[in-house]
Image 1 (cartoon, rainbow, N blue to C red):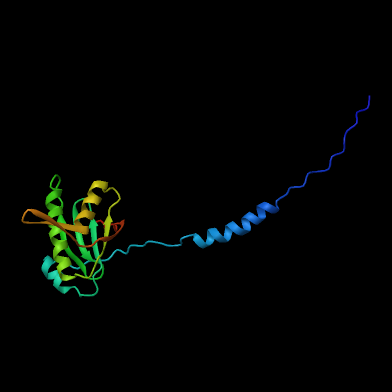
Image 2 (image 1 turned 60 degrees about the horizontal axis):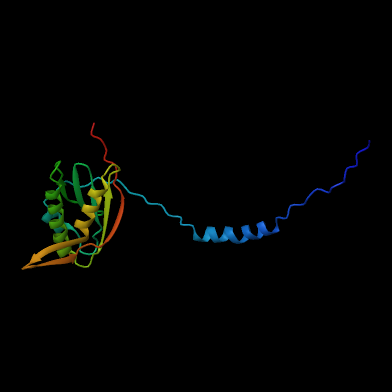
Length: 170
């Protein structure tokens, strides 16, 4: 018995709709893509002076406040002028270091009242809670005036990033 086979033409792929989608989608995606790169330069900082001496050396219009959160210290400095103060962190005594940082931020704000930007840089293994506490100390100050607590903005515009890697001695 002979079998009859139907002759079928090969199916054509209809890709016109897909090509139209790609023609519209590719330019849209390229126009909305963000091409940016964050770079941190490692600088050799000058020797540590007293905080008031270091603040006096800064130029009034050029402050770029930078707070570097390390596991053993909090380093406050100007990106251009160098280190202002290094606050040592002792285990279990972070509250004292944060109070010193808050006092220094008030002092810096009195010298530079127009500045509202600061950068907080943290080492990779920094606990999230420590980062938030440092950001709070940099952002605002709370003082008691009589029976009222008064909140004053210090540096409310905070950028965060990775701390520069310290070179090992030796």
